[in-house]
Length: 232
Length: 379
Image (cartoon, rainbow over all chains, first blue to last red; front, side, top):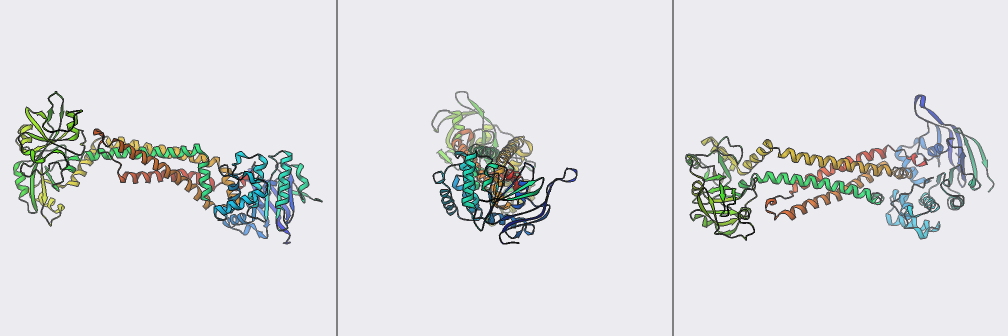
């Protein structure tokens, strides 16, 4: 596999259900995500983009085909190895933020570091530094319920970055935000996440932020039917 | 991640307190009701427990428990004394005559007639007066609770009189006796006086109290007495257990207390289990996020168990604390004296709470372990 390729999908299919209720959601996806780029996966609701994101992130197993992430074929990993692989190499940004309501902003950001076994105080200190650089230095001890939607998504972004993963997957990161807030989150994502040794994959149907993409893969009915290269 | 688990647990105050109090009240009920039950059972053996001079009780072979006795003959006493290995043997009378105060207040009392010569069987914890005064004619020693019944609102004092079966008797001492099952006052007098107070029957001796000779086990001497006389000879502890088992088998007491304890266990399990499960369900997305981020199932199981055990520990501590406080506050109330929280009950309650929290967390663990982490991508 090309060293510049972070994710490679070959003839990937994914079925749900069994017998007559079996549904084919991915119908043979061929797709690549390059390091140093922000790749958007766009398409109508039900086109299979979130399922493909889950398969790439190792949260769902492909029914057939091969998924290679950062040079590692996911099929060859045991369940435990997949969890460790995700913990080390992947960062997640979710549509609904999924912050832990009982933890402060800094503690939420520290969770991936705690999962890796870093001592609590060191993890929170590192998380606080990152949050400060993302403009949330005054809100380190605020709980998610005390933060605006944009601030929560910035905390979620910090959580995705804090352990310095090589692949960041974002699921509709702007759909719960207004246009201006969505753009500011995407600006942060573009400036903090995109690095030569890191890839960012964003699932979205928010056309207002398409201009942040380096590449846009259009998904339709379970396949990638078109890829656009953006001139940024 | 333990820190995250604890913050998740305490973050939702209402549910956290709900869980803690469900387990606290369940622990309290289980410990409290079990303690009252054990206290009642211990009360059935109070006279056996209070007579510490003798190690062996000899009685009619058909005797089932201490409160129902068939009198032995004086000849039985001599036969027991003749058994090799018996250091000494003395008579004990136990009856339930009625005593009346000068103001007309009357009650049945437990009257123990102890050996005239040695006073074996007399109380060992005197509060007022002297055991030696039992040698005076028509004298009795009464327990503190009995004194307060006959002479309410009066300080403990000796020299008071009671009437028993047309005998005017004098209180020459006040002792501390273990609370009896039937809350009757307990009186001690000499054997010869006791049979006078009650009225002579052909046979009056309830028990023979025996001390085994040095170098012989109590068990061996019991066996020798039984073989030589045909009478039943039991160690004090065996006789106490026989009495307790009689009450367990022949009264509704254990069933009633057992039902309460079971209800406490079931309600505690159901309420704690349900609240904990709802707590988990409401945090399912968060658990999904943790799984996506790379927290292993084993770690998440550990987090849930930690949450359950913290809740269990705090709830148990509160429950046992409330129970201890209850018995501490009531220990000087005459009719509640003697009820205590036994360490065995505290331990048993801890095991029951362990059972509750394990059951409560199992459902939650199962739900989280079967959770697809991809759930986090569903808006």
